[in-house]
Image 1 (cartoon, rainbow, N blue to C red):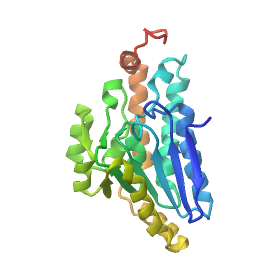
Image 2: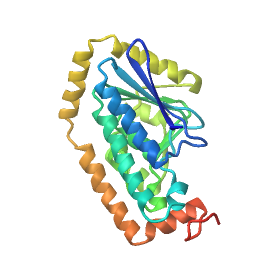
Image 3: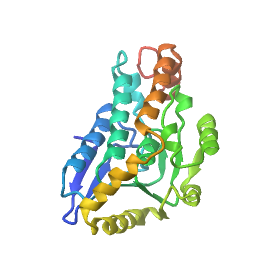
Image 4: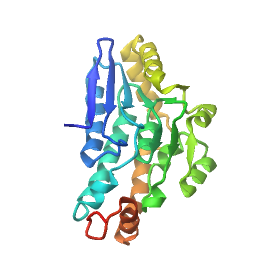
Length: 254
């Protein structure tokens, strides 16, 4: 069963939900499934706006490091990199606006999804972070830089610290915040205000706004990923992931 489901409502609002307990750390297939769901939304002219949300403790905890460490060779590493790239790209290039609804934690790959979304709504206890340096990886700085100013992004990146949604709301990168039990309703209200517009105009607007972006998010993220592969070839990343996942060099539980 896929960790990602997609449902199109009669009003043209498509709801894509991630549900992979316990923390929504997605497997390789899970990342590709997000990309597939968003690509399908782009092609479906009945879809007017997408809500990307999650069930469970938090929005997203990044890649499934245990899957990576319990897989022989580099297939899971390469798969996770390609899957994240596909998912982030699909969110950004979706032909209709994507509203990310963040409940609780949003770290690592979660920031990649949210940073590429058009609108962000978060619970008042939500927080965001890019802890990649602790696991010997680089990535999502491209997307964190779309949520906070440059020096703030660098401080968060180097320290692996997190930042609360209430701070991002002050920066304007989080559009609305509210209690966990109300953010889905808030998102539906925002989505409805978009869905009532002529979808031909909204789709043209999305393409136009992407066209005037000062940074190519796909190329910049791919550039980051190159350093992750270098760290893996040097053996640094594998060592740090083993420590995080609690596995030995053979990939077995310690």
